[in-house]
Image (tube, rainbow, N blue to C red; front, side):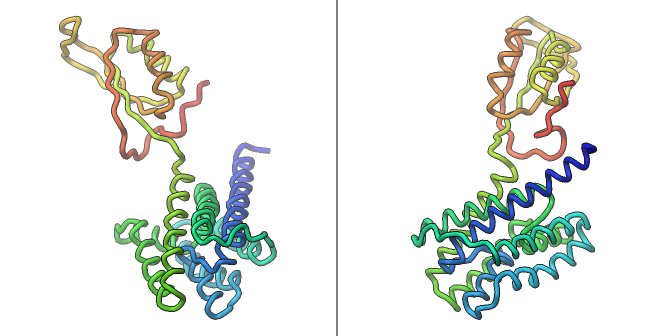
Length: 287
């Protein structure tokens, strides 16, 4: 089997895990207690609770326009994966029977949102979506530059306002809590719990430093050419400034590397708020 085939197989396996987790959140927590999530899933649950229309059927039907939008404007591969994921979720909701874990409203909101967020996050991370509102957000962001988060927030604001009018204010408020938990867990699942930090190093032994950071830490770096400088050892010329971004958990490791090669190196550490592109999570192959 080729590496590409194994990678694709892994993606579909993880999407299946995501679908299973999302169905646990829905069947074991949200649906039995009449709580909503945001997006198309929330609309399907609302129609089920008010008009007694099958949630699985509504979920698939409401997703079709968004999938068509994605097919022509975003990615055909994503559409194929999303069709599999959404149909899988619909079937899972229909046939799987989970025991209701709790009837406590607060626990239902939190843990229902947790499982649903994990499922959505794992699915998105592998190139598919479980909810059409995410596709709408991506499309509007590409077309008009409005952030995906704002689009989804507006979509759900309308949904929860309707819920407050049709069902009850209490259900709407607990559903908002579920949505907030789901959104946070989704973000953490996609982005991970990683916290990145930037490190700038000025050393006379920059060549050895670069090799050690690449080989022992596996991190990428940017090297700047310095012209003139003045430090504890007096004036210097033609020196290199190494800049790398690493996980905060690895800061001690990089400091050990620096101390071993050049204890007198000048080091600046700084928090990193936003990064786009470059070598970040995918560290260099140590070979």
